[in-house]
Image (cartoon, rainbow, N blue to C red; front, side, top):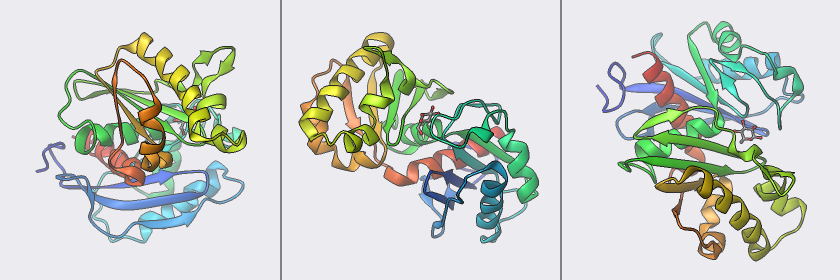
Length: 256
Ligand code: BGC
């Protein structure tokens, strides 16, 4: 048995993003991919039915035992598998029971979770926050800002700290990676926005550790040293594998 799941050695993770849908089997002992990852471009428009078809295509491309747990990430609030918001995705997702839809499309039980929750949980199990006790906050900087709050190893789902209202703005509209691109900011200018964002966050949550994820976390040396925070802040370790790994781990636990 794996260290984390009582029943499973392996689980399958799928990460649904704006441009690609990626899946791979995950070895739950070490959080590594157990086979090559498959990526299929996200269908446009990314309606629930079109995405479900791609999810099924990915699952069918692997030779998975019938009882391998499957976890899927989605960039929205996911209350017990039902999408509740659509900040950066097709509006038609609101109210969609993603677990039901993906389970039907794949003819298996599928667990659907928020993308940042999956990525954050993976960092706690296998990455930058491994063995850290207390309150860990993982913040992903991408098209939007996602957050995962993990307390003594237990995930508090759907925290949505990207949508804190700061200085009259939805925080992600100013501090996400996409805002850096959109506004043509250099690292110093973007870091000023991050400084404001993380100061508010640390004063509200008082985490023991902040982990910064998302694609831009590989450039951590360009912006993390510019931040002056009370809380220790480190880059994510699992990089773009985090969503797949976390979704797999959460699906395995849901089946324990
Ligand atoms: C969404 C979150 C998501 C984050 C990162 C936000 O706009 O509201 O649910 O986790 O973007 O994709």
